[in-house]
Structure formats: structure tokens, C-alpha cells
Image (cartoon, rainbow over all chains, first blue to last red; front, side, top):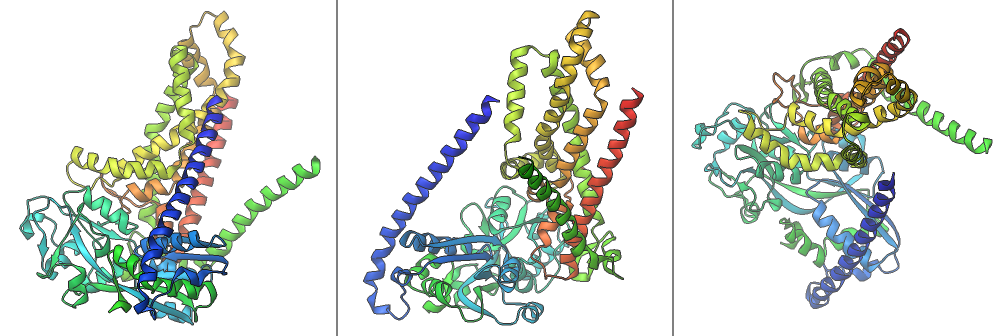
Length: 302
Length: 278
């Protein structure tokens, strides 16, 4: 039983280390992020600095869309290191969970990567949507896959399971492994509605439950095709051109790339107190930086 | 002292009863006209109004059975090794490692395996994505192995003390003692270990969610993707509250509860008969 004590010490050590590091990280963000705020006096109307949080206290729980998480976490780290009377938690779960939790009043902000559905509006009247970014959803393949552009019809047929071999779309012969998202995913619903024209997704598709898991799975599978938020795409996967349009933020913004959606934060009625200040901060100068860092296009900066 | 213990016991009992009441309350609407019947079906295709969860029942049972088929013999072998067949020092090391394994959270296994295992399975077997019945079952086997070993271990400690001198006096060597006396005499303990291991495999969510591929179809081979009931619950939580998809989570939970209860009762009866007959 000696190992028991040792593992307890190991856990304690890990906790102390983790807290120490998060403390250090907090300090670092604080000092680097405050400088640009003071320089940007000219856009004071959309700038909300950390000063707005002075004197506020309490909990702010956020849950829902996984595409929102990087932005939410950056904001939360900023705010909590400036004011330790505020505790912000950021959880995922997907857009459906976000709408559900804000509707039931379990969180202060529910994130959604899609608009509310009719039944959600009926069930939870009085929810207010705050759009803060535009994000595209793109089909992705392994970077070594020679097929890096597809027509809308080909994409549709591949996800429906009608085209099952890469050689049918000009690639090396071999089965196509289709990856998709769980029902209720905002990324998934955007891709199915706008990328597949509400077409079917094959029952044989492997289901993963976050944008991150999708990227990891496709990056490890040379025969894979999946889809994810453009903002999260990096070198480990290749974004597929769709009807000869490259899936980039520029093309999403100028309207030539059509598989896009808005990222929303949802509140119960008009936000008040800490929630209101948080949303102002999200849409302020620092928020814009974080949104762009995460690979999205801020909606109100245009 | 009695007050403290009594309160603790009362809280534990209340928690268990409360959980049953909660599940019953939420599962109750399922027993209305078309509630449960539409879930007892082989097709899960919410877009077309099909909400059958029978493929997930097969998926869960298949995963657990395959995991136990691997883990149980290994666990018995590990115990046999540690209780005399193996040399003392390596035996102690093996048991220490198994003890350490019990403390590893399931998400750690699932996360590591989700990155490593599917590409290996893809390379090793023709066809499929690697997110498969086989892959998830292998990781589940690793997950439940320490549970099984620890239950057998605690059962054998007492048995060992009670029989060692007798068998030594009869001239048995340690191997004969373990194979000839310990294993046959501990049928009930082995069954208990099996039930706990099976229950753990059946109830695990993260390994199934991250490794099985979550395809709602009945598998035709071990390298096909499957969806477990536990993973299904987690996958439909974001669907419209009160809708048939969401309710299928409670049906899945109910079936899981029934299955584990049934297995545990059945094996317990078998065990009682086994030990009284022996």
C-alpha cells in the first residue's frame, strides 16, 4: 500500500504545479493585454477595458458551442486575473447543450454556433442572441491526400455514402472514411444545411464530439474526410476547396464561400451586471483580438 | 458514534433510492403508447423519425463481452502468477503495477488510445477506420483488468491463508495449489470479479465514445464501428429536451440498469449454487 501515499503526494504536487502555472500565465496575459487598450482611444465607442470589471464580483458560468471555447477562455483568463472576486467557468457540450442550459437557467451565457430552432424558441421564450463572429465550416482531408478540391455535388455524395472510393473523385484508390459530428452540433448542422444542402450523412460515418477531436481524427487517417470550423484548421489537416472556392476567412467575408454561420452567445433577456460587462468586453478591442486569434471574423468590426 | 454511522447509512440508502426514483420518473413517459415501442427498433435515423436503440444494446453487450473475453483470463493468470506460480519479486512488481492501474481515470486511457490505436488498427486490418469494436474492447479490457484482479486478490488472500498449510502438508507445490485448490474453491469470488468487471466495461462511457466510432449499426465484424448505450446517452444530450431523441437517453439508461441488474442477479445465483455444490 506504500504506493498509495506516493500517488497522493504526486497528485498534490501536480495540483500545486498546475495552480502555480495558471497563476503565472494569468500575470503574463494581464501585462501584455493592457497595453493595446490604452493605445486605442480613437475607437473608444467599441472599446471596453478591464476597468469595467472593477468592483464587480460573482460567478459567470458559460457552456455550449466548442468553437467558442478558445475566445471564451482567453477572455475569462484576462478578467479573472484582473479581478479575483470574479469566477468564470467555460464548458463545452455543443450548441444544443448551450441553448438548453441557458434556457433552463443553469448558466449565465449559453453559446451556440447556429440560430435557435423553432422548438427551442417555443420552449424557451425570451432568449436573446448576441452574434459576435462569422465562422466558416469546411470539409477537411489528410494533408497527404491528393484530392484537395471537390464540387458541392461530390461533397454531398461522399458524405451521403454514395461515393465510397477516393478514385471516384480523382484520388488514390481506397475506401473513403467519413467522419461527422453528433446531432445538435452547430458545426455539424451548418455543414449539413449549407455544405450538403440538407443532404444525408451516411450511417457509417464515425461520430466525434468536438472540433478538436475531428481535427485529431482526420489528421491521423490518410483516407479520412470530415468537416470543422475554418478557424481551427492548421497544417495537420487540409481544407478542401468547395466548388473552386477556397475556404478562407476572406472568402467567407466577401460571400463567395457559402458554408458559414455566426457564432452567438445567448442570454436570458437583456443581459445585466457581470454578464453584460462580459459581453461588452467580448465585443470590445481585446475581444476582437481574441476572436481574430481564434481564426474567426468579428461581426461588429466591419 | 452510532448516530454518525446511522446518518451515513441513511444518506447512502436515500441516495440510491433517490437515483432509482429519478430514473423511473424520467423513464415513465417512455411507457406511454408509442414511447418505448419506437425505441425497440433496429434503426437509428432521427432525420427520418427512427429512434431505435437496439443496435446500441448489441454494441454495448458486444464491447463488454469482447473486453471480458480478453481481460478475465488475463486477470486470473495474473493472480495465479502472483499467488505462487511466479517467483516472489516479479509477482510483487506485477501486483504493484496492477494496483497503480486502478487509479488511472478512464479519460486518460481513452484519450491516449484514441490517438494511438485507430491508426495501428487501420494499418493492421484491411478496411474500416480503426474506430472499432475491437479497438474499444481492447482498451476496455485494460481498463477493467485491475478491477477483476483486485476482487480476485481480496478473495484469494483469505483462501490462501486457510489452505496453504494443508496443501503443503499434502505435498502440493504452489502451482498445484493454485490450479488444483484455489481456482476451484473460489468459484463465487471469480464470478463476483467477473460481474464487477463486466459491469465496469458496460458502464464505461469515455472509452466507447472516443474509440468505438459511435456508428449506430449492428457490427458485422470486430473491425466495424459500434455505438454503446453509454456513448449514446452522451451523444443525444444536446438534442431537444423532451423529444424522442432525448428520451432515448433515458431508455438507454433504463436498459443499462436492467442489464447490469439481471447479470448480477443471474451470476449471484449461479455462484451460490456453485459454492454450495462444491
